[in-house]
Amino acid sequence: DAGVIQSPRHEVTEMGQEVTLRCKPISGHDYLFWYRQTMMRGLELLIYFNNNVPIDDSGMPEDRFSAKMPNASFSTLKIQPSEPRDSAVYFCASSLGLGGDTQYFGPGTRLTVL
Amino acid sequence: GQQVMQIPQYQHVQEGEDFTTYCNSSTTLSNIQWYKQRPGGHPVFLIQLVKSGEVKKQKRLTFQFGEAKKNSSLHITATQTTDVGTYFCAGDNPLDSSYKLIFGSGTRLLVRP
Image (spheres, rainbow over the protein chains, first blue to last red):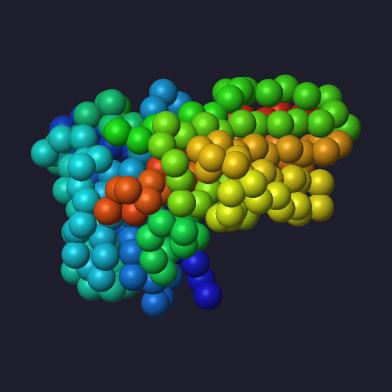
């Protein structure tokens, strides 16, 4: 199995630009999670999906952030417009279930907003 | 809301010394998971503990789950440079219907060769 795939691995953009991060979960996993990691705030859960349906988006910081999962093998996290404080590593993870099930993380996208 | 704290934030040890990180939750957990993130890498699952007072070992790593299921520890015996990274605990609150995993703040381990 290829594991969770994320693209791009690195993204450098200017403030005000739209940024789209992509994720392909492990086949057969029903849950997909988007996390943001910074030195100051650690690992934060932004949103998660169950069977392509957003379940909890309480971690999404602002309306500038949106996430979609059009099918079981693809999800996007979009930031529009981007701001320098959005600079972070964004991880996508997937799992078979919640709670006690292992989460498998992708390699992450390092976003820098200038 | 539920909080999971880890101490210490950082630990710098000489290779061969032992290391322990502690995880404390504000609420009782149904299980605890531990993850390791190498520098520049992503979190990777290490182990899961479910039972009160449970102890599990993986070679030089010993994991414990507290009797009240609100705290946990990871102990590494005779650290090696390959142990460098950030160790996260994560747990879910059985009273939270969302069953979300809440990750701790992490302990960053540095090992001097």
